[in-house]
Length: 518
Image (cartoon, rainbow, N blue to C red):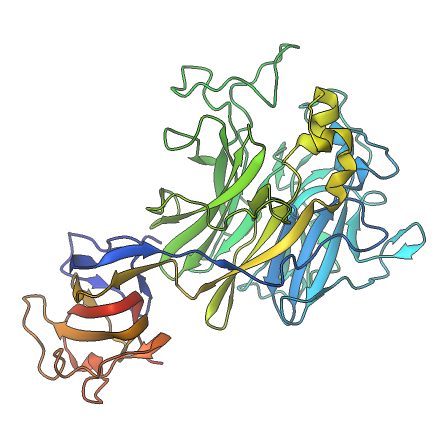
């Protein structure tokens, strides 16, 4: 569903959808206002989860290796690639994908426990494992979501993953396909007890090690982001460097796509998927060594928002960046192209990487971004010994055992951008909008001596009687959902036609507005 202002209509029917100022969709003009981007603040309790149990070997909070959802409890899952340092004794490459998948839970989202589930033992220890190989099929890079629209209680939780059958050996040559592998699904009523779908794989031949499953709460579609196309510029020549091919910025014929990129698939039922569509490919706005590693999206009413995880391959670090879209297909970067959450300083738990494959969670007046933080580099601890790199992780790859952690950063609800005025009064006027909802609400914050006032006009700039600026009850507070009144009058649906809203601000920030009944 593509909801935006259109010149072929006299007005935009906004209904009860929140109108954010991320783009210019409803803005007619402004005076003395600036658009300011805001960033989540790291929680002081970070890191929330790290390696702590005797059965944990190398637990990961990486793209496609963890998820967080809010149900009756906060629930989280992560992958332990125990094959790196467990009984397999440093088997690099695909053998190291032997993994266990852990479940965690929390009442407040900050203090997490790892409950013993009685499902899988490791060295005599009961564990919080929900999937493990062996004895089960190899589940690689699972993406887990809580489906808000699912009516079948047994399928409330859904998992998408790369599947390798038990009886199929690992390929001897890295990059070879698993015979019988593909994108598969599993279902659970609680996120603990999982049942693989009998018709797996739903996409045969899928071999992407990044697959992020989401649900579009407005359009009602399942959306999957992954690396369906692989590396288009690959070669079977024995001297070809699969992980570090040449980068051709101009993309000459036959050699484009030598960096990681992201494809999008959609489905009405989760079983039948569209053909992959390329939506993220590094371009002139990226550095020469930047890879688009993975992407996760969510909805803020009509706006599509998302986080693009970017690998800076030379420094071997990860960052994540916010993007927005009106249709979920064509994405734009925010005007300030800086990471959504900055990496920490020397010695911090997120010094070398910040990334997320999980949708944020709305908690009260805030949006909570759970993210993975790394205090080891992206892959130096994996390939450093083989390549002879002069880095600590190559000399001691087990540094990565405590190299991955769960962090949290929080943001004001809908607080991605604001229209700001400082010591000079400013105002913004909307294009004509229409709603049958009875009340107007704003998300705004006023500094000391600041205010926000609203005036309702028709599309020809006539002020509606009783809804002038002079009639407006001045807002001087800080509220994500403040009902606007005019001398106590709040039934804005008395206005019989489309309207233009003019917001007057001084020393204040306006984040969004909405017509609704409560």
